[in-house]
Length: 257
Image 1 (cartoon, rainbow, N blue to C red):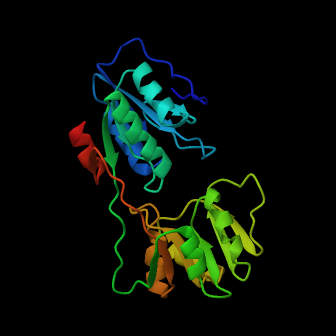
Image 2: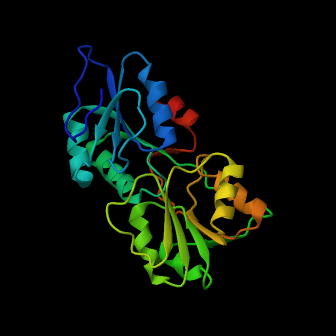
Image 3: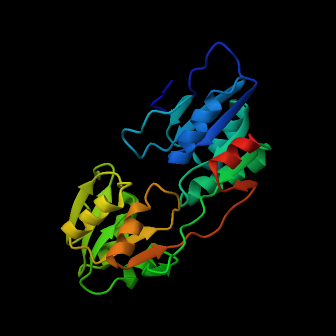
């Protein structure tokens, strides 16, 4: 059952032995929910932040909307008797992961954090690795044509580079005008096909890509395409913040559940 508000989802008449809350929004979170939902005695709730207007269907129950910080999440864990919290959010969802750690600690709830292994540069990759998006903006050469493979909340940082032309790709249309002097907007998900990503890069005469090292296979096709086309990538690295039971695969999450 799906709820469009941050209120408690309805429950079936059969009371589960254990209720699991998955902090989701990723492909891995959806897979975890699908595999755990078929286990007898388990109740599975996936929480989504609500940034995607039309998320794909998920197994189990779905809760959409914020919790109100670490305290709100802690209250939810207690009120709904959550026996296990699984943080399978995006690798760069630092605030949500920090709230998960604080809420789990304050309530004594077991926490499993899924940490995707980051991508590793290969011999033909032309990467410039930086710590922040601000560093990425500064690293771009003058008059670059840049594919920004980032969420809408990160675009404003690049208004400091009016000399560059940006091709912005996002799933949903932005609610406000993008603060970029020169840009094209593409509304689509990344393709899993390197050939399709290469064609997009050719069509827009892309000279550089800016992205975050989120790991996984879902957005890796553009990295393969860039490697094949010798296009430089400005790669924003992730700062470590693992705690509790931190694992690097869906299989490991399932094994610990």
